[in-house]
Every structure is written in C-alpha cells, then in structure tokens.
Length: 220
Ligand SMILES: CCCCCCCCCCCCCCCC(=O)SCCNC(=O)CCNC(=O)[C@H](O)C(C)(C)COP(=O)(O)OP(=O)(O)OC[C@H]1O[C@@H](n2cnc3c(N)ncnc32)[C@H](O)[C@@H]1OP(=O)(O)O
Image (tube, rainbow, N blue to C red; front, side):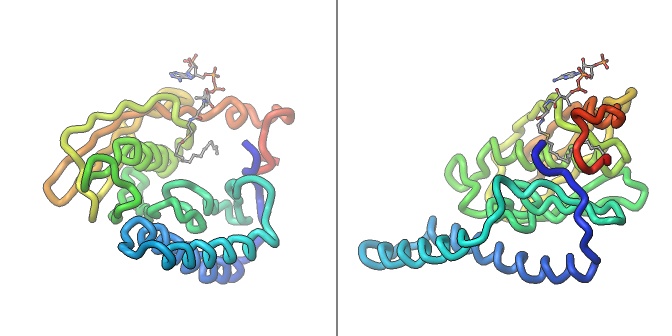
C-alpha cells in the first residue's frame, strides 16, 4: 500500500480543494462521455486530440509520483480521492456518493452510469457492477466499524443492468473476529439486477499495528 497517510489539512482547505478538483474532474468525465458519443470525425477529431494533448501536457508539468492513495485529516476522516468508484479526483469513478445510516447498519448510493460503463449494448458491464458492489460492501463493513480488504466476492447477475439511474445498497450480514461478511444489491428502474456477498478481512498489518515493518503511516 503506497500511500495511506495522515495529511494535515483544515476543513476549509479540504473544502477549497474539493471545490477546485471536483468540478474539474466532472469536466473530464464529460469529456470521456463526449469522446464516446460524438459524431464528429476527421479534422474535428484531430483538432480535439491536439487540444486534449495540450491540456494533458500542462497538467503533467507538476504531478505526484504514482497514485493518489488515501489521506486522513486530524479528525480521522479519510479522503479516498483517487478511488475508482468514489474518488472525487478520479474521472474514471462515476463517482458514487455513499450515504450511511446513522447507526452504521447500511450504506446506499443513487448514481448514474453512462456510456463509459457499457458492456452488453445499453447495459452496465458486469465487471463494473462488480466494482461498484465491491466498494459498497467494503463501505458497509467500514460503516459498521469493521473495515477490511475484500477476501472474496461472489456476484449474482439476476438480469441485465441498464445504463442510467441506479441504486446500490449494502449491509453487514455477520461478523467473526477480524472477518466480516457483507451483502449488497444493485437495482435499476425495473428492480433488482445484481446481488453480491463478500468476505472482508481486517489485514494483519492493521490487526497488529505494533508491526512497524508493515504498518502504513496512518497507524504511526
Ligand atoms: C483501519 C483499517 C483499515 C483496513 C483496510 C481498509 C481498506 C480500505 C477499504 C475501503 C473500502 C474499499 C472497498 C473496496 C475493497 C477493495 O477493493 S480491497 C482490494 C481487493 N482485495 C485485496 O487486494 C486483498 C488482498 N488480500 C489481502 O490483502 C490479504 O490476503 C487479506 C485478505 C487482507 C488477508 O490478509 P491477512 O489478514 O494478513 O491474512 P491471514 O492473517 O493469513 O488470514 C486471516 C484470516 O483470513 C482468512 N483468509 C485470508 N484470505 C482469505 C481469502 N481470500 N478467502 C477466505 N479467507 C481468507 C485466513 O484463512 C485467516 O482465517 P483465520 O485463520 O483467522 O480463521
């Protein structure tokens, strides 16, 4: 795990960054959608490519090494901004905004998957459905105070998931020591599409924080 570390930002600084990077990332998502769906061709596309390459070169003038990782502020609130499902700075992420019950018993999200997530024509790619549910089950475990890494994930595709507005929900089924079993489902306007169950395990490096060789900065 390359970056799982504290970062001392005030709530105001976090708000400021999110106000800058959130809309920027949304603009990149729109670009991806437009790139898939545009009917322009020839010189228009070559000109668009040059413009996109110029923006990319400008952004690369100052960049970090590797991925964004997960940073934590002093209050312990994490910022998984590079996450492939919920990352505020990740244009690949839909992104899901995950809500949780006050007692931590459930998490849910209403979101939209467009052309960038297509598998079968007009439908969500099975791997994307699995990606979303992996994240949701993981967040259900975390919301219940049982964070962990996915050890197993079993996915049941009940019917094709249409692109468009969707809802995902997940909850903890049972726990045993450092193991947590979670379940979840993905529904479309016509009802249940995908169900999943998974085992989440608090990894050894988190169970034994005294192990200074393997623990990440977050635990120091
Ligand atoms: C504050 C702390 C933060 C913690 C962390 C948070 C992460 C923030 C996530 C946010 C939400 C993201 C949601 C997306 C979730 C992902 O996408 S996670 C990415 C995909 N998953 C992975 O890459 C996991 C890769 N595997 C591993 O890291 C390790 O094998 C595991 C699963 C953490 C287990 O590691 P370990 O605890 O060091 O292993 P070990 O002590 O040998 O085994 C512990 C127990 O688990 C069992 N076990 C181990 N592996 C398996 C398996 N695959 N199947 C069944 N049983 C297994 C063992 O048999 C053992 O059982 P007992 O003997 O205790 O009964």
